[in-house]
Length: 234
Image (tube, rainbow, N blue to C red):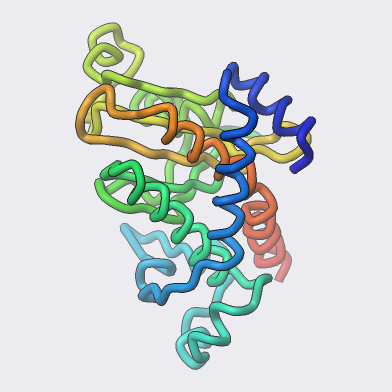
């Protein structure tokens, strides 16, 4: 992403972060996305939960995937398995540095009635596999609010938000961060969510790392959106 686009993103989100630190964090995130290598169980990537199958959503035949060798799955840049594996490793890298217990990455689809979120990756607390972003969901899930508004949301003490009605329902974490992932036109492609069990646990360093990742992964989410469109046309 060009420097001007990064500046526009930070300005739009009201983030006053160090340009140098942002650049370093973006380079680090891109390095993990490009170079990181680790085997991940296929069930972690292509999960099925409560009747939802991520593979079916993305038009992937998992039976054929099991016939391939890991080197075939994880070395081809334009397949969904590779894309999800690299994004998981990038998220895991950030979580390991900042000790946040929960993270998730959602893909966002906007339709004529209400947008929908589909969980691509997660670790920690059980988060919904798919959400129709109606009023109730927007009030309960911070990442649903971010998806529908396009605004970054950071909660340092969930209890305060519950007390004044800004959030409702059961909450698994007391510190939460939801960052929109947008294309060059500002359209929301997905949401990056990170959380801690304890309040006031999100540091500026974590905010920088998560924002950097959200800025560099739009092309990957666009590929997944394209996979869905291709699947629908078949």
